[in-house]
Image (tube, rainbow, N blue to C red; front, side, top):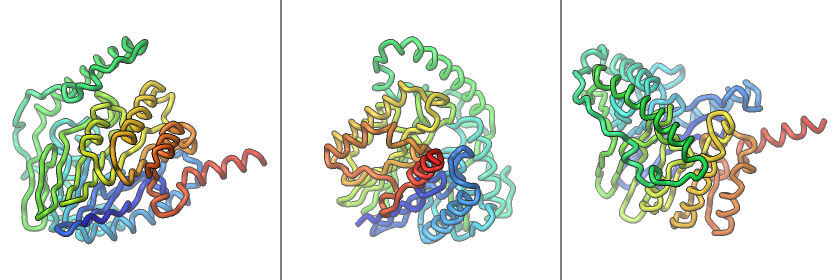
Length: 364
């Protein structure tokens, strides 16, 4: 048995990718957080606040009954601070197994800082202790280049874009080296196992609860190779005869090796975050959008997934259907159920409603 509920997503009105999973052995809540849609999204601030309030209620409801809380990375649309107003932190985090992205390595500078604030507040709230009690000297200073973990993407021929891509990768590698310095000289947070607070770092680990397995990936780029947004962890929840895959924020997926991971796992249900098409021409290129579209079509053709929810970043764009038309048409041709979280509930995505409203306003 594997029961799945898409708790809150961008298509429902807030930046979020929160899901609840229940098996015969365990109850899991993944990424209990949300943020308001970007300032340029064409709905009023009052509507954004309304959707946020609805999302918080849904997250609180399902997180409170979970046995395990998973946090795939430290962006505020994926986790909540225990001091968040109107959050019952005790019911969300207290006494539970909290499996998180390692806050010490393969993490960018902003998430490195956010993780420390989160841990500082967690030990203060639940244990009335300072974070200093849970810090240790760095355990290593030599870190493997994560580009080595994506051989398919590394060998891909981009034609006339190859030279530009080479420059981007060289720049990314230099940023990576700077981050290695941060990781090797900063005090490390250690895992916590005390009476009312149990936090473990899940990167690359495997957990077994009766007939349920939770299998985490090693860190994956939050977008393209050496993405400035850092790294995330994805995971698979598997029972005796059912499998659910959750990507975290790999944005598309852009990277061919991540599409291959999804294909190899061949899940019954896949929760995949789409490309941030609202950033097209700004932080996302046409070349990388084409990568994401081709990777999604490959996933559709080569998996037997009965349900794929494609949501999150993609649904911040009122023109999203137009920009990923090739993938939507491929799903229709293959008779694959590729939908948003809103459509899972029989609702129209907020992006579609906002886009239609904008068109009417322009006609007037």
